[in-house]
Image (tube, rainbow over all chains, first blue to last red; front, side, top):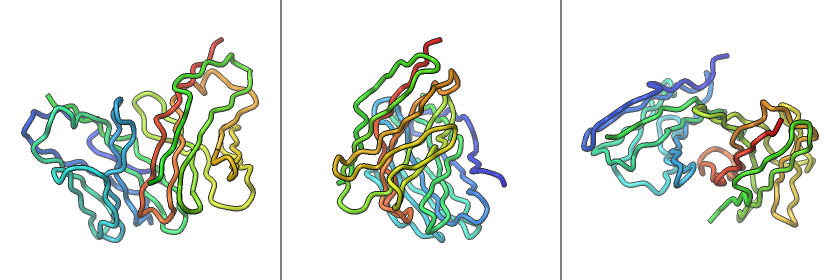
Length: 112
Length: 114
């Protein structure tokens, strides 16, 4: 079956702009979580959605937001982009109760 | 707060030699433990996971890990490495159910010498 699909793969934005990233989970997976990966901070948890509800959020400013649709696809939005937002953004989906996470290939965001 | 420590930033191993990557965790309850591998520019691939039961867990690509509660460790091992094993390895801990998210270690960069 198809894996976790993230689009786009690469993105270049200017400071101050906003960006939306998309994640399509594995079919049947209702939990979607997002992570930011940078060389300095490593992998950090952003937030997790289940059945269109945000269940948990990491320690990130309010500029980072997300949502989940009825088909479990998820989007994350970053407003007023800063240079420090440049990172690989990874999405993971999980089958509730299985407690395993399958990651997508990520979206590489560069802020200039 | 939960945390994961991978003490080795880089490890160099000769092809065919055995490998052990260390992972120590801190978690208030029964941990769910994972090892992931990441090749350059790619996402994370799950190698193995531990939830309960047998403390020695078998994963893909010939990897295994042993959960030791008394030492708060979950070390990854492979008896004989291949050049294709060169990658970044991450240990992670979570509370299960997906809601808490995963806490990752900083990763160990594995270099394979010919």
